[in-house]
Length: 168
Image 1 (cartoon, helix red, strand yellow):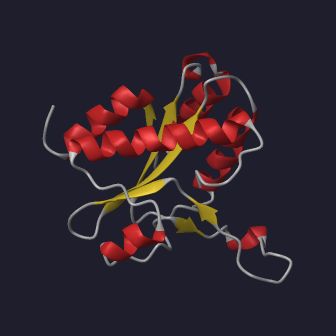
Image 2 (spheres, rainbow, N blue to C red; image 1 turned 90 degrees about the horizontal axis):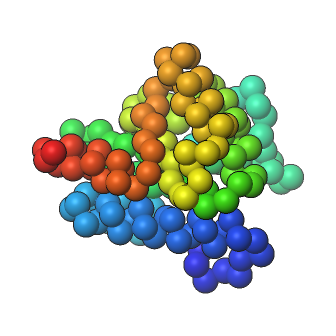
């Protein structure tokens, strides 16, 4: 992804924040699978962990009839065939990323991520505490009892990872 030319700031910001997420995860000693080779090295299929199918009633196919897929930002494999799907939204300024979370809420409601693995939704960036849509996302997810853990900021993400490792 970083080899591609980015035509807007959000792509650059996203790449930078994904690297930070990976760096934090690695620093705690927890694997974060993000690309095909990562999944292969753990003997895991990407479907249901990295790739997710739209609900059947959305009828999302490509022009050639291939199945469309959603791609999560990462997957943390845990013991006993468990794991955590990682979705990250990063905002250093206001923009279209804010609008995408309403669609993501619908994806969670419709079961796109399934129920086999936990789902962590991580908000990072300088302006996250100012973004009302993110606060509404958390409120709606809680009110609807959706299976998602919402984490605010890199520091809180690291704390959650340390809990996984049995630390404080």
